[in-house]
Length: 405
Image (cartoon, rainbow, N blue to C red; front, side, top):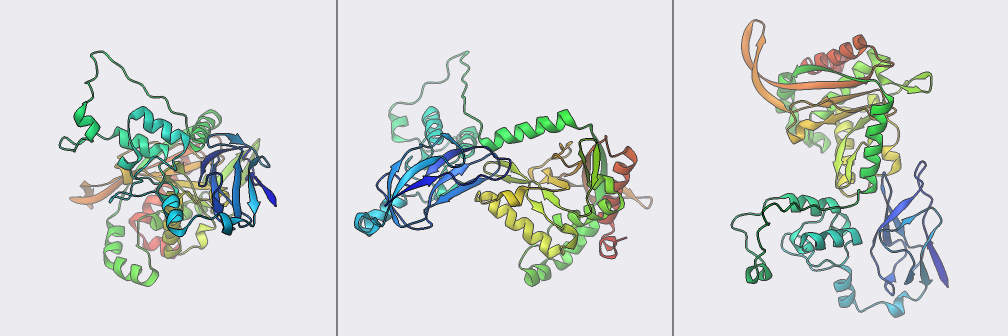
């Protein structure tokens, strides 16, 4: 019996998707619940699993095409997988291309058309690059990042390059490469423009001495990890400090809806996370009810899901306030942009040991600059400054987090 493979119902607010990658070709055997292809939306990557055992009889929509909910992607023939399935050795060879010692795919097979096109334009092979996509597949970001790296001076040249070395760039030549934005990159661009055009954004700054937190982490990190199975990082302290500030200054946890201000009686904190597809902001829901261990576990889980493109719409929907940590990339100072419809965001930065005056004496302390961007339409400067100062005070005296002072 023939069965149509259709685009599943897309998440709310998502009108279309792009066929990112087919993991099978026409004639391949497929098992029930096996993922046949990936659909890329502007927020998440969706898998389309098979509903039966059978054969992929026909592919009607190729990778790179835009589709909508209900569109027919291909045809499955039910119940003939056993007769048509290749021998085990052949199946293993077809399903998993050989990999190099570094784990990179050794052929361009299995890559999306956009990736193959970019590899061709740059004169690269998939075997040269470690993929971060599903099953080790390359993403456009993987290829672009590899191309941007300077070639090692002593690196071995491919045989073809040794026989016919590439001519140096001609004097005055100005090369360009044009690649399409991914859906998520397009959506990020839209939201950034939306935030700048709809909110009256202003940023206030402060600095925080992290010695007390460093001392706590140094003293308890081993016991914490042994007890909870996760490392004691900085983010749990920052999230708890943010919650104390939001409790004191509810406008910072509010949002604008037309001519109304919506004050949220809960604390859903967005944590900005880098992924192979771009920046995403999964949500810690009811973060005020989470322990330090719960916060650290949730952030670690979101980071793993982001890396594997496993984040769902539920993970990314909502949020009343966000935290972004540019310090992990070496940022000294920045002005974060709001994540609509939220009205404030905290930017963390690099920790630098430098001289400061404490009780009239010059001492060396681990210092971090903090930046809070806020919507001046509903948050006055006083509330923004005082809420950021509350975060600073909670971090410099962590006992206040435990006593909720």
